[in-house]
Image (tube, rainbow, N blue to C red; front, side, top):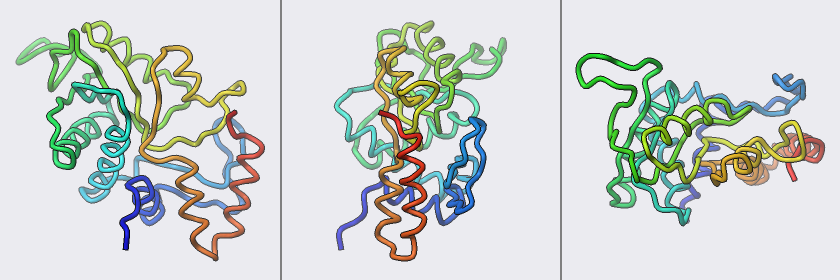
Length: 220
């Protein structure tokens, strides 16, 4: 039997551990929208969880056509992501890439500075990774940090893309792309969730609720 894509493996595991909740009655998001599903990356908290998540990130990076030298994860959630994704990428694709993350406050002793890991970013291409995107503030800060060190952020990879509109007609990911001219991809997205659910007869009603929500709030 053919192995599922890494994105679908991620969806199945997220459903199993409750990181992806299916909500027949809906849950009110910060945006005020009542969503039939919710993604919480904070529930990836074991070695197995991180391995499956990192595999999906690595697959998304490998499927792209944009070369990169270093994986950068913004503090705090991006710290374990940067390290585990770089390791999984090396294991899966025999590719040597560095990883780097920032501290919230610069350190003035030891190795010092704001950055940890492969910190020589000048002139190098950087893949920025993080869990989700809402207003893009954390990602904007990370872009400025990398640019301040002379690096070039040439892509952003998220854990999960809801593929829904932000304030306008575009998704938060598309708004980020338009503002920074940095392409955005994801380890998994709403299409992957629907693909997995449609393969289960008992999920017909849930699929309909998600598709109705997408019809109302989906990005163009």
